[in-house]
Image (cartoon, rainbow, N blue to C red; front, side, top):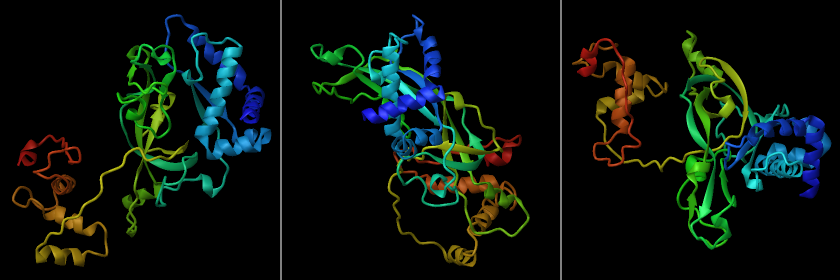
Length: 343
């Protein structure tokens, strides 16, 4: 560990990271600014790190969480040695973000959006290219929070011993919730809300550029392209635009596990079975035909097909006797002619 920290120090000194650390600490010396964690972004060139220490370079490329811990330890030591920020008392208050400049040009470091499965390997940096098809508005997330032990006799009832910092792939509940226990006396921890540090996040939906082939007049294949969600945080928010192609570096992770899929056997009419067998050669033909003829008493066939397909999907997904409506598919339709939509 000491050798790795020494290698980190050498790299930061050669790359100008220490000078940048000194400059980044100056805004934190404001007397009115007291926070639980202080965020520092460090630009890391994997090739230069490998030249300094191959073991450290391998850690940066294949174990980013451990590499972040090494850089955090060195940054904290530099901050305390040089007295850069007096309000930083423990290493847990230093939130280091490693931003890789690039990755080796090998297939192992590329995440192809056409391949499956995706993201089931170890959490390490990969690059991927995709087309932005949707994005959310900018919302807040918790960068870090301070927790105190409710036991007044415990040393963790004061100070900055229990600091929770957001990690890649973690949900909000992993950073802030009410069931954390003290590591010394096992008493319950309570958040000191006035020290909570918030950041910006934005969700962007990426899809493979070959998905645009459906807009051409050429013969369509039976392939289906699944989009992936990309989290933009803090200074990266609003850096993308819908319709543009981007290459990004990030760490793939599963942030939500859906419940197990259950299948209940049911019977269909002969007409539906015959239609499904006749359109088995195409993954879209069956749903397109059903949507085309859905609601004939309300609107002629061929009109509002997208809305009809959405209504059919909502009917399939939603159950009238379901108490938990979290998985229901809600629809929002906007139009200037509300007569047909009301029907």
